[in-house]
Length: 473
Image 1 (cartoon, helix red, strand yellow):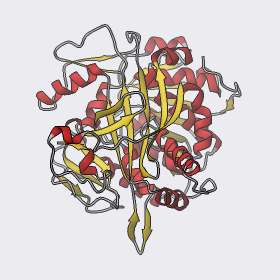
Image 2 (cartoon, one colour):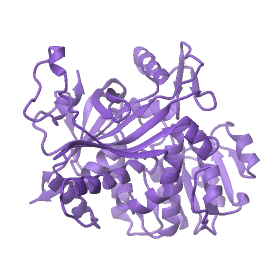
Image 3 (cartoon, one colour):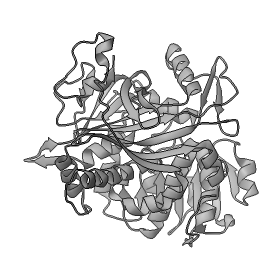
């Protein structure tokens, strides 16, 4: 079990968990461990029977009732009131609909990504821009403009998006310390952006390598993963998205801008699950990861933008670079070969995992020391020792949910809030005991390293941190 301060956070309201897949099952024991709340004040509303035994073993009410546009108000209305908390861990349920509902009830809210109603990700009647994470975030920001303050609604606070935004702030302070840049801890968005600019950060990868393995091989027609299969396939089939840096001078031939909004990100005319990029982590070294769309690619790029005269003078390029576990890689290849039609059989690796770790962190590049990775190296053995119903991947998510819930309880009138706007030190204080080996590592790696061996042309050798150098073509 993780060593924590054992101080319970008092919460007098009720908690409703929407969705109870791998993340919900991993979150529940953490909430009961850290909150002063009776199990009878927690209820679960989910679309499937999976997890009933686990919920009932804790004395938590479990209801199978898929939420839809036509029923979510009537289902949730008797379960939530002023001062209660809705923790949304579902897929295919509109986050923004739930945010508005919680505001009308005076209830707190948290999710791990901004979800639309079922079918929007693959609705080809809408343009790729309209079904992007950029567009979903813009709608959330429009809600914030519509409502002034109100009960706290924390958006996108899992591991990534979520926890990694706090890693970035810690990494920026580490780099400043190690390169002799004097700075106090920034207090505002503008101060964080100017610090990133002063340090010369050009690119930020959410660089993740999952090495967890199972003795059970993947079967033909089966998608296997260490976290939600539906969640991974859904975001993998969206267009690849990335925050677009002000230093970039080679716009991708398949790249597109958005017609409205902040303009901090672009998308590629291809799914993220077919787009690969070069990246680096301390344990793995160089690797090819998938540029899967994630909310932090957009919110971090926006948060770290320095504007002058309405134009972006500085902004880093930000994107996910994800190498999942080996059987998930095989599953992705099969999925692509079937033109993105998901396999009939799905398997979540949990108790069957025999070894491995999830190495999740942020890689900040372009500063005086080259590249710096900061994050969590969490093994399956450490995850199992910390909390039940978790593997290394899920625990990095579930502890971020726990930290976000505690922060929202402590800050109940913060309105619609993104991870970058939260107290990163408080979040890391809660999460750190569950994250295994937390390290910062410098590297002289660049995406140009050893590229001459591959007879590649058209690289930008003057600036290694150009996106075209990272992309695998």
